[in-house]
Length: 195
Ligand SMILES: C[S@@+](CC[C@H](N)C(=O)[O-])C[C@H]1O[C@@H](n2cnc3c(N)ncnc32)[C@H](O)[C@@H]1O
Image 1 (cartoon, rainbow, N blue to C red):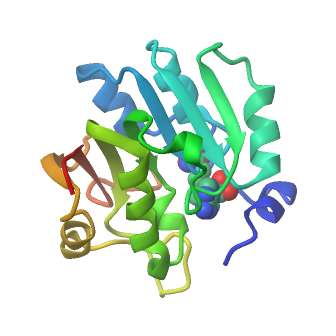
Image 2 (cartoon, rainbow, N blue to C red; image 1 turned 90 degrees about the vertical axis):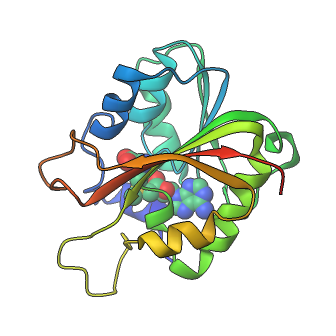
Image 3 (cartoon, rainbow, N blue to C red; image 1 turned 180 degrees about the horizontal axis):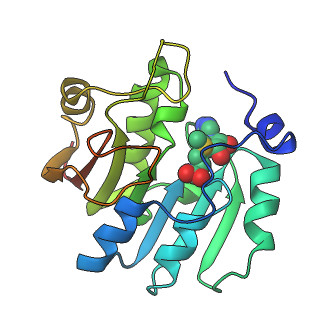
């Protein structure tokens, strides 16, 4: 498994573009994310601050203490909070708590054999009727199997989220970073249902 804290220590964080994910900005220009929100693998917190700026109570969870230090060093809204922790081993106070989970570059950062564990944590974290908004990496340029990031197929998304989630919609976002051309990312909105 990748040593994420070492990557932050060495400044080798090419995923950090210094701003929130464009597909998330696009989503929020049309929809509201409210209530209790969890952002797993939140890094230095750009997505957390964007969502908190709209009024939701947002928790950014990341395994890296250095990412956490960087996140709290920004000017933050008081409804933006951060915690050091492993999303794959969710603590009890984070279970059945969230109205929304916002996924961006956390699932693709995990080893593919950890994906079922990721989905189980998502099922535990989100309240019934809550939402999972995911920006998935459908394609990674020049991918040779040695990620992260690791891309995910539409079939795997469907299989992984078949239990406990209903797909509300999915689409290719118009807004994207220049380095992630149109079609590399796909947005999925799922609703947590009874499993
Ligand atoms: C590719 S980075 C993306 C960070 C942030 N989402 C962004 O776009 O800037 C992946 C992040 O997930 C964190 N991470 C990796 N495994 C994790 C886990 N099991 N639980 C929580 N965070 C994790 C890493 O420390 C890293 O900050």
